[in-house]
Image 1 (cartoon, rainbow, N blue to C red):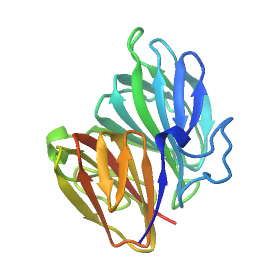
Image 2: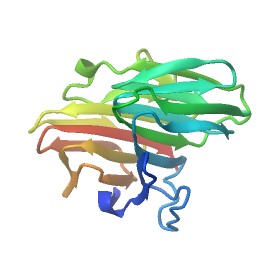
Image 3: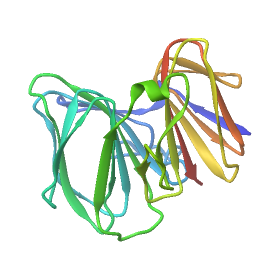
Length: 234
C-alpha cells in the first residue's frame, strides 16, 4: 500500500468575489505540475457561490461531471431544455459525452451554496449527453461508507460512464469503517469535514489521501466526520 497526503492548505485558491474556490488539482489559473489528477480523476473543486451568482452557459465534452451539494441549492439548466434544482445532500452525475451547454446558478439570492464538483474521464467517449441526480439518504451512510455512484448499475447509486465507485460516510467520533479496494485501481479519500485517521496519517477538513496498491481502505474517525472515498482506474 502506498499513500500520499495532500493538505487543505496546499490546494489552489481562487477568490472571485462571488466565487470562493479551492482546487485539489490543476484547474483554470492554478497550475501545479505535481497535481494534475489522480488516474481518471481529473478535477475536485470545492466551491462556495454567493447568492444570486453562478456560472453562465458554457460547454463541456467527454467528461463525467459529478456535483455534490453540501449546503444550499444549485439550479441546473442545459441546452437540451432540462432545468432542475440540486439541493443539499444531493448528488448529480452529468455525462456530457458528445457535447452540452449548461449553466449552474445559486438558487438563492441571499444564501451561499457550498458544493464539490468532480470531473472523471469517461470510459466511452462521444455518447449522447445525459444526467441523473438523487438525494443521498443521510441515515444510510451513518457510520458506514455508502456507495452513491458506480460504474455498474446498483440500487440507490447513480450510474457513471467509468469503472469507478464513489462512497460517502457520516461518521461519529470513535467509528471505524472500511471498504474493499481493487489493487489495480487507486482510491482518493477526501475529508469534507471532521478528522480521520488512515493508517498512521491524520487527515482534517479539506485534506486528502491518494492511495494505491491497496485491497482495503480503513478509516477511523477521531471526531464527527463527513468523508468521500473515490475509487478510479489509474
